[in-house]
Image (cartoon, rainbow, N blue to C red):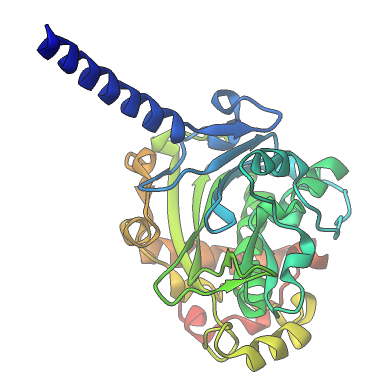
Length: 335
């Protein structure tokens, strides 16, 4: 009898452990759109090998926010012509109050704009401001600090913006659609910023871009193809902005988006296979397995097509689109 009682206690204790573990790592979802109905993860979403993120599901995007790094683990959104309108750039970063409520319940705090002060590190948008200009509310949503990743000025204002503008030009000129996912990769040398030194600075930021045709619908493998790019989080000298603080600050003071990023496809050398990004970033993109991953040659064809588009179109102006075709990389002229 005592043996049965003891076995019963052991069984219940084991069940309690499983219940506790399951609930300890239960996914927390906040936002104004049910995750199952959010078109920004219409293809699917990455899964993390480890971690316990908070999912932010809004009409403008879906963010997996990592409580340990205090920044997005990944961000997913769609882009189509209807995403782009006349709303001006909000340009005011602010704390994500909805996320802050959840974090305070965990005895944590959200990230404020001031946490980056004095670091010479940019508050790098993941969903770009210029990708959400259909309304003021859409644009303002991109300035939540939950949509921000620590980026060097060189990454944010040159490499990153070059890729952003390339994708937008294709959407405007070709009338297609895109599904985008960004994320961060860390290594043993990754350091922290912030008043409490608890915002982890990634080694690199990656972006996965899934293109569909003009009438193609996201999720149709036959009409979709994707490319993956992994951009280093470095200074203009190629150094670590956390160890080369002087150069990071020089870049932050002088690197301008509108004047010095009039270059096409400077992101091209950082094209990388998705499996490499998966292994480096600790994420799985199983939902992309049925979609064609573009070869380097196919990406070069898109870039060459984009160059011709720039020559034909005169409508690419302002912070959203402006580039100078005359300053295309030399290797591109050979295509």
